Amino acid sequence: MVLAIVAWEELTRMNDRDALTERNRSFIEAFRQGSWEILRPVLSPSFRYLDGATGELWDLPRYIEDLRAHPAPDLGIDQLVVHVDGDAAVVSARSSSRPGQFNRYVDSYERRNGSWVCYSACVWPLSSQ
Image (cartoon, rainbow, N blue to C red):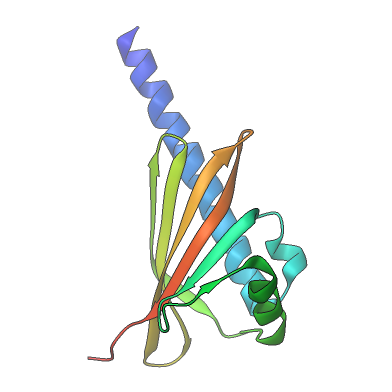
């Protein structure tokens, strides 16, 4: 019985990682297209963005405006990490739109009514070394 519970918990974590990886794909595609319509289902209505370069905290309307004004069709990611802890999760990766220039982002998620929503994000530039 204990083995069955452990197996079920591992399956649940794997399904959560898959769901969060898909949410991350939608997030990235939204930025490639500058599309609020793609991003809307991913974000919490109370979402906040912390600009890691300036330290500014953005509210959702400002974030949407910036998303629409600056599509990034060449945006790519690597080093994706998904960490799930109960009903909380963090998704992080390295991103780049130009060769040799990288950022790191971390998105914080919470499971609400059986679905993962992102309530906070931060992106900061990485030094080129």
